[in-house]
Image (cartoon, rainbow, N blue to C red):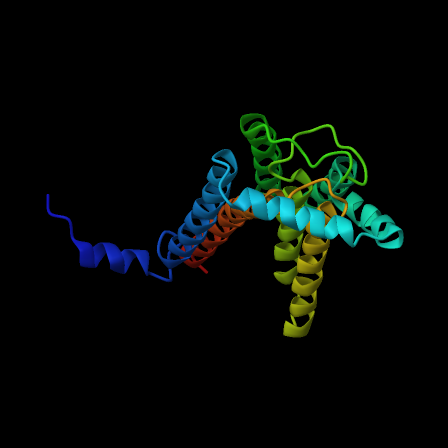
Length: 237
């Protein structure tokens, strides 16, 4: 059986079906994020120059750390604490359930479980020690890579941002939500660096891992959207 490259490319670029252009874009983004994450992970395991950048950057922030800013970022970092996220997650799931937006609900569950499970397993596999007690503002018990706070901030707050921009009518409101979502994610990640509880690659790796599961969750939701749209078109009026 001959492989028809032209037909394959045409199907991948089809806009009206989910398995066409939409899925192609999601897969490309997912693979780029995955390749970058694997590259950072490999650099840490093999002790390549990225590790030296981590130490240099951590010491630089420690040198310029001030008590007022440390206290501020200590509060910010709790935005992505396990207890805070669980409370927000439960509230979000209850809201989505009563709004009957079950596709979003299932997608959020997928995103959360995938994020938490992968962080747990990768921390065990990489087994990277955190910055020392002479650097850290406070001590954490788990391993360093990837940053759990950064991962869940990207996945959870990213998904909430995705949900909100699909329910706002004006471009200005959507732009504001995207800005606020990115700001929260960025501040949580930087708080881990400023407090000296993670290295730069821990946070970047966390962002990438969280983005992987965010893309997975969005793909799940968008697939349901396309299937629902097709079914509505096929339903006799």
